Amino acid sequence: MSRPFSELHVAVLMGGLSSEREVSLSSGKMCADALEGQVRKVSRVDAGRDLAQVLADLKPDVVFNALHGEWGEDGCVQGVLETLGLPYTHSGVLASALAMDKEKSKAVLAAAGVVVPGGGLFDRHEVARSHVLPPPYVIKPNAEGSSVGVYLVREGEPPCPAPGEAGWTWGEQVMVEPFIAGKELAVTVLGEKSGPRALTITDITPAKGFYDYEAKYAPGGSSHVLPAVLPPHVFERALRESELAHTAMGCRGVSRSDFRYDDIKDELVLLEVNTQPGMTPTSLSPEQAAHVGMDYKALVRWMVEDASCPR
Image 1 (cartoon, one colour):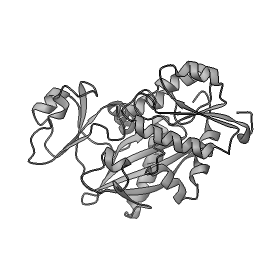
Image 2 (cartoon, rainbow, N blue to C red):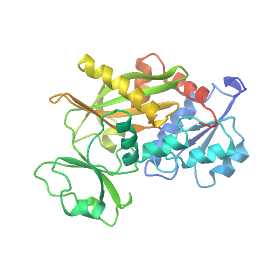
Image 3 (cartoon, rainbow, N blue to C red):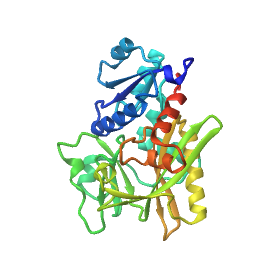
Image 4 (cartoon, rainbow, N blue to C red):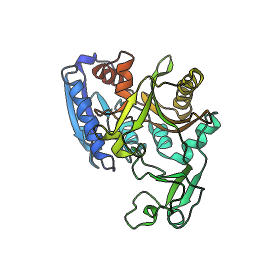
């Protein structure tokens, strides 16, 4: 970008077409509010299928992608932005598509030496009929985020009927993984020019049940402890593995790695990499940035200044 930051016209993409639309609207509003007064102009765009034409008419200098989930986070919108030649935030086409596909991203992470869960893809009707893994295990869509459509089957429970129901909209195959007991951890990474930098680790405790959609986004849905209280070797390993995952997946800008740590077995497992971390009032990445001295406005500014095309 040739223009000074204060003279930029930034289009903030929010909303979109996925099941995470409401989360994206919240993220987008906060990011747009943070940019107001910092740049020359902020255009708030509720992204639809006419996005290419809308952006061609707006002619922004930078696109801040605050979309979450299918279409906005899986490489599709990134491809539109690449075609238009518009500098944009977060990861590019390949990394975005890869991170949204849990099966393929696990293969890449494992090849890089990161410990990932076992399990695999199964037909959704088979999963609804019988236990495909010994309980406890977790069922999740292969290409969704924000814990949408995630179910935990505990020991002694029957198979979960949800994947076999007519209302299931997340594909004919589902990811089934062994449930890993212990702590829910998250690490935000900034893809700086000198290399990826992990900020800190948050230990997340849901108010009830496990870390599902409500626990992530409802006020009081979970409590966050940062930095997480962990054995030093585990803390350091989580930081380094999140940086390794960011690099292995080809991420740009901000990413977040989600882990489970079984403190009885001393086992740290990376569940997934999120290329468009939430920016809502309860989101982890802004909270971690603030912990290391980067407030919300500064984080959003960093993301805009990091924007480029191609990614």
